[in-house]
Image 1 (cartoon, one colour):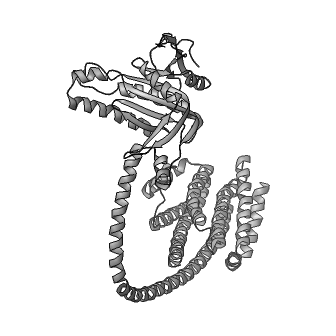
Image 2 (cartoon, rainbow, N blue to C red):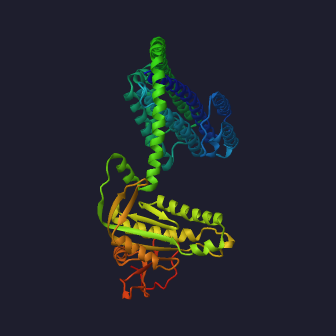
Image 3 (cartoon, rainbow, N blue to C red):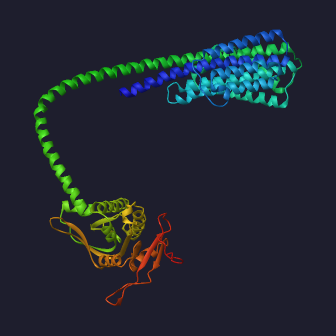
Length: 546
């Protein structure tokens, strides 16, 4: 609750700052509107000393309002708004070019600049949408927009009453601002009863009626009398009306500030109450905690003793689990801790044996330390590749690795693909191992793969082993034994599984080895995967995509 009240307090303080900033921006907008109106009249009549004096006075009012602006919202476009200094420089350049400007150029340039300042003010409404005074904030900015439309009408009307008419483009521009201004002012009154009352208090009805008569002449684009004096009358009436609208702006801003201050006071009071309750609660909690501390002292001693024993047991359990997970697959290890693991029959499993074919050559050319270092590098590659896949490591004997897929892994229907991709990656990665010059050649793997039914179970003993039995295992071992270096030797069942995928390069083996004088089953070389960037085995595999 205290955080909520503190957040509301912060929001209301931000609202107050936003209203203050909007009011100061409104002062800048008002002075820019006044400068635009006088400058439009000046460029319409030229060389009128009285109007020139008014223009110089308008310059000073605008400069003072800009200097009083508490901060600046930096925007990159237009570039003049990057800083207050760059805007003042741009405004000064425009003032120096007054003699060469037309009333349309003056009106358009000021309208664009004032539009940017009004956008700054509108952002405050967006940020305070959930506030209780949101309706007054919307009315405030509707009034600012309506006042700007009146200002554009003033500039265009000054030319009308000094020259007797407007061209079609200027007339359409005037009508658009006239209609839009009426809309903004009408919406301003409807949003807030306070806004409606403020307008009744500050707007002179008689002045508004005179202004409407003159506005109608401009809309009809007809006047019998036009002169500098008529232009001055129009400017004076419209300026008075805009000043009265500005009084409404200030009255509404004062009301918003008052409401905001009330809300800030209430939220500060709530925060103070919340903090007081929190302090009392903390004092009581400390007293209760002291009593509990005395009681729990003896309990802590017993707890510490139990924790030490528990930590010792957990450490031993983790050591046991770690050792067991090295001997059998993780899921089997978990099941062994919970109950006896019964042997299982798997209809389709892919088994792979991998061997370093030139291991004996390395033995004859290296020291024991060098050989062990090489084997460690090879098995490090094996382990990293196994971690990436749903493949179970079933053991290793010397330089031979045995893995299987399709036992307890997810997506078991893809076990043949997983083993095939593993074999291709192993063949590629192992060849990249940097060997010592004394070895004379790179590591050459040979791999045998077979797919079929197996029986799996745990062989109990001092070191339990998870073993596979069946013809599939024997066949995979035989494929390894008859494999050539840097080759992946697969069975016919594995070939059948992969052939349906249409993305592997496979070639039938021509020189099928014989066993006991009899011809063996067909076997195949797995040469590559079209979807992989790893090394493709260099065989004649034209027309061998399956």
